Amino acid sequence: MVVLSFISGNLKGEPCITVEIKPKCGFLPFSRFITEENAVKRNVVRFRMHQALKLHNQEISEYSEYNPLDLFSGSREGIQKAIEALYATPQNNFRVFLNGSIVFGGLGGGTNSTTVQVGEAFEDILKNVIQADNGQRTTSFLQLVAETIYISGALEQLLEVQKLDTYDIEGAIHAYYNIISQPCMVCRELCKDKLSCRYTSLHSIPLDQSLKIVKDYLIAATAKDCSLMISFRPKEDGRLPSHNTVYLGSTNQAFEYKVYFIDLDLKPLKKMEAYYELDKKIVSCYSQMMKTEHETDKAVTINSNGSVRDQRYALEDGLFTEGCTGKCK
Image: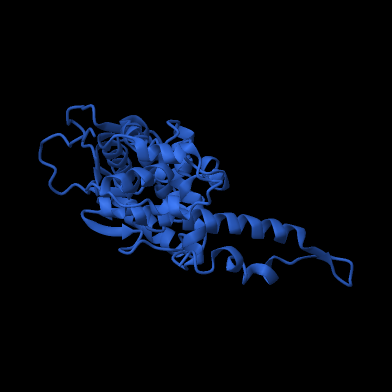
């Protein structure tokens, strides 16, 4: 990864604001080892499906509208849309620090949407960084973040690493059992009619190929779970221009910026089985949620007064009971 640094010089006293973003997986998997019952993974981003499991486990209180495909789209419009969605529902995926102290997002990563009060407080915090009228600073700041991501190209590099996962966990798990020289528990669980040659063939490949499959998967998993850090400082008049300067047109300000990644420790081999089990839970909960919503949409009745009554709230308590009980805990 390319790390962009501030120009050396006396920056004492200037405010430094840093944004931490967890981009998550920026592409739809394309592995031929994804089973037909899990084909939804090819059409729905992992982040969206994982939200269903987190909601079921009460780790979050509402869905985020963030779509990693927007952030990784390479377009200004898509990136801007993604940043606005992250700000609206930060969860643990969007945090802001001012001079090293957290000022937005919470130490534990907030689980709720950004309230009016939180938004007003953040707007006030930005007054020494963004030279805009009250009520416009946050909008300008989010534009600054989006523009920096766009011009830095950092996510293009990250996406390349994420795409090392060409087998998906449904394929890589078989290579894992080759490495640890144990009977494949996945093959044991699969019905014989589902155990096609594409899975059994994975247990006939050389050990070095199994090692490469699993190593690439773990490297990609690290890239899917790392944090993108972007630091800004307002650029003073008279300082020499540099390649790591971003211009904010709405406020006529220039900022020096630095882009880097953290949490890059390679995921351990022993997590492979946990990744496989989590993948099953995520798909199961999301599929059940879709099934329940479909049933709810059909459960519209006409009450005695002749008006339409939606039964969504009557069914809400049992949203995940059929497909996720026991599987998603």
